[in-house]
Image (tube, rainbow, N blue to C red; front, side):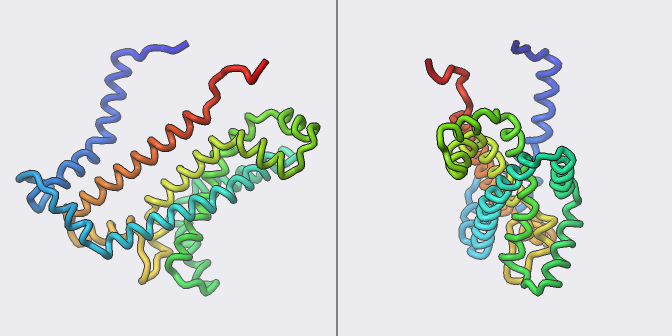
Amino acid sequence: MDRKLSPVSKLYLAVIFFILYAPILFLIFYSFNSGDTMYDFKGFTLDWYKELFQDTRLLIIVLNTIVVALLAALISTMIGVLGALAIHMARKRNTKNALLSLNNVLIVSPDVIIGASFLILFTMAGIKLGFYSVLLSHIAFCIPIVVLMVLPKLSEMSPSLIDAARDLGASGWDVFSKVIIPYISPGIFAGFFMALTYSFDDFAVTFFVTGNGFSTLSVEIYSLARRGISLHINALSALLFLFTMLLVVVYYFISKRNKPNGMGVGK
């Protein structure tokens, strides 16, 4: 049964959300400031947004970041689904636990260690730091996230579904593409959007593997902030926040569409 929140619980949630969102709203508010600082609001203006869209170099960096995030999310989702299937289908419990532990180690490992490890690896392998080094690094740390998103859906799936499909003459590919994938699709979408988010805002790993001729948004904002805060960074952050909210809304509607309605399959 649904339980109503007490007034204390509602107040607690309100305080938590205020603490989380107040800095973001403060940043967005001053992106419309006609002044040059975040200390004194002198009037409403869109000049900082105009300056942002006139900064060709920054727009190219934004495009680079989006391309890397989309490719990393897509490739890591495909590999992560196969990895989750391999862990789920492992017959020995010790083997399954060992594989899952290895997957979890990559998630809890500090980003600094992962970034330094990739830097050493790419240097020893002779891979030039740039687009491909950033993409490979993002794919690597996004795969474990996808695995964790997909595994619960595989655990929920009844083995009788696969047995029934095989009894009806379905091939191995048909079982995979028409039974398993549709059933675990909510987990796949969740893994894709989580990987997209992690790749989009990653800084620590990207800082180590970014070359001189290539940069992502997180690294660029860090370098800009060291030289002094400009309000066109506020404008960029406001647009990125709206983009993130759009991703959340899209994921919400996809999850809602794929959620079972609780009704019977048929008579």
